Length: 234
Ligand SMILES: [Zn+2]
Image 1 (spheres, rainbow, N blue to C red):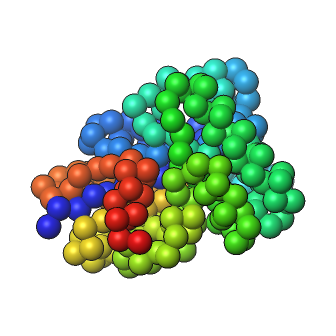
Image 2 (cartoon, rainbow, N blue to C red):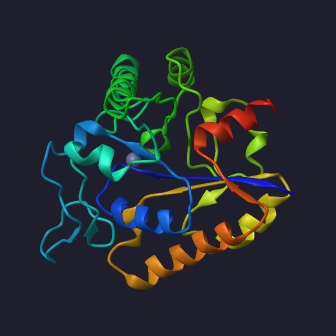
């Protein structure tokens, strides 16, 4: 059975650059969910390890840095980009108007920057509420992604609560893929900074991308294309 596979990565971190090299090597598509308001204008912030005494937020002592606005179209050339709010605003944690303005401002910015439609959305911190789900649909978004894993992505009741199959580094990732094949679709998500500067994690991630690409039944698609497919079952 043919299976459409989509993946997406959040936040516009500088480790996306290394991921994109891997994706290009295996002709894999991916969607990158960006927060333009958090990105530096021209100077990329490279990934780095925090000093041991630095107690600010990090992922296991590592930060993925940020790509610069000035290099967005070069870095993400050929890949789909989607809105992840202007400054990662969380639905239900800010006023609805602030949230939707932030989501749409990002959409408009990405459409201007990349000169193509931007219809995807990923909820920052996966937070969503009935009113923000409706506002995103009314604003023209095709789908809005959560991080709540499901076995069959066609079982969602609305594309404004679009649940993926799994996380890209889940221990049972390949089993999830095997299981999802019978549904005809597989969708996974992550943050490239979760691979940190650990070569073994990057190798494991590359093995997974390579295995999916080597599967003759697989067709890599953008998340908006997958959402279009799911829509047929709603
Ligand atoms: Zn995020």
